[in-house]
Length: 554
Image (cartoon, rainbow, N blue to C red; front, side, top):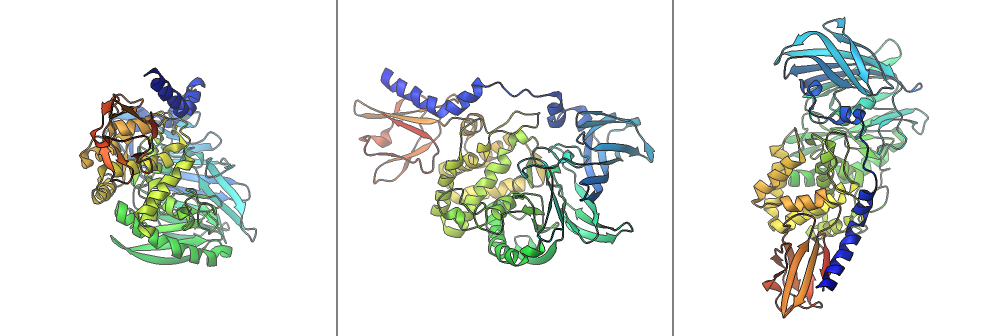
């Protein structure tokens, strides 16, 4: 007994090692600025519900300078005289205009507080405009750090793009910089030196030549959009188009690429985009933005899921910059950035989490969408192999759910561990069509909404008819894996889970080698497993291909 316990403790120590190391390190010291940026519940933010933005800015690529305004149109959710919007401190607020007059404002870190001359009544619709200018933060390694990218194309012409997920959209434009309140629609007006083009979200409504050597491009977004998705892409873009007959009718496909990439783009996009849309619509339901169309835009960084204007920088090759992240061979047969970033149109853009602490909803489901694409193209076994191969990227270095209210995401394991978690739920459900309808139901139930991670968990529990809460808790809230401990004693086969979750009881598939898999449901206490009567160490087989777990057999 003591020997067995020692083995369990040693194995747990190995599984917990990264997390234990984390616990020994000082916890992150969150600041007042983190709370101002990340808090969702302060009255200065919740007092107004966004209805519409008009972002109107002028870009000077040579000086790396931006200037302009953003109109905030909103509905008051309570009586108030003061509110907060956000803009990074290196950008200057020139003035805030309300009913044609300047109104006072103050700054604290990257938050700006506006005081109105009299109370704005609950239920009323109102608006104000922020005028600003400055040199925005330049990203050093986009898209992994936030900011603007300034570079040149092959002909030496300016090529500029934004990428700001995580850091925040207020790194380049004034906004209520949180995901919980998405604006209902938006007009994006970007003025650039004549000879260049801007490509932003939605549909191009108008192009206007200005008198100062600039041209303004007006892009209308007719659907809700989160802040970090709002994009500016400026370059000597060439345009070609196509269409796709999807579940909700004819979807326009627009491609904006640099001149040197046109031929490569036509080949690569044709090979990937329509198969991607077929797979995503099959598994997740209709593309969420038929009104705004689908676009791929050449980007001077790897890529980003900018809604209806997906940034593409995978250099027109299959895999992830030419390599297969799963190391199975399946990931080398398609363009990772087209598939993954487009998958975010459903999870991340259609369904957006209120707090980035729950970003596993975005990345777990989208990483899983890669495997579903493989399954659609090459069969279920191929898709399962791809998911198993994703495990090579998992670190088990911390909880996948981050701390709430401070703009902090959890472990990067939200991608591949999140994908493996979803595959385990599918395996336990053991009904592929029901699983597909649940995935499609998520897109429908939370269509164009912001959600909490708990809402997604509650939906899966309700629609599956099973309570997966303990499984979600183990894989999202703890770094370690649950360990299935099996013991042979007095002619019996005993099993239990070793888990950080109280009364953990995940079903798992086992068999005698050569036989059929059968489900067992161990608890955290040893109990005989009738399905494994007569098993030995040599004949016992636990389905670790579909279940990402530790196994200890004694």
